[in-house]
Amino acid sequence: MALLRLTDAERGHLRGLAKRSDDRRVIHRALALLDLDSGSAPEAVAARLGVGRSTVYGWVARYRSERRAAPSLADRPRAGRPPTTGRAAAALAEAALASDPRAAGYRHTTWAVPLLVAHLKRPAGREASGTTIRRALHGPGYRWNRPRFVRSRRSPTWRQAKGG
Image (cartoon, rainbow, N blue to C red):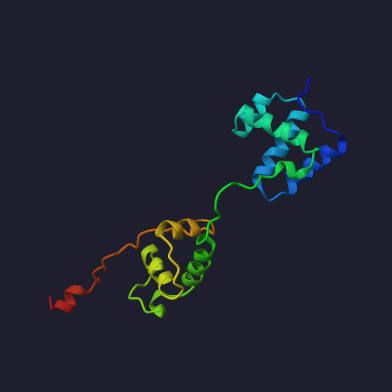
């Protein structure tokens, strides 16, 4: 006996959510409910999705209790204070990354996290740590590497320049 029986309308709605949703958590939950409807065991569904068995049972209970509505698959608001400087610092840092540090009055050719922290503190008065800047810029795909200093290669004609 299956843990969950869906109507055709519910099944179609969950398939649509699994295809069109932007949130991967909603997609996972919709796929789990569809797997359970097809007769899969909750343990197998949990192993396939990389979650615990009790998590799958919780998704089913929440889907049943909230009258099988799509919002039952979405994350609920989390407790705690929302971040204050993360989004603002990310926007300012991305704007700074579009320009050359030398144009802003620095003697560097590339931006580094400590330089961005100092730059954000100067005009905007924003206090953001290096960790905040790294975390904020990691999402858009920025990766930080140390600049490599390469010694200049000798010219093939260096002996001629020396007179020898």
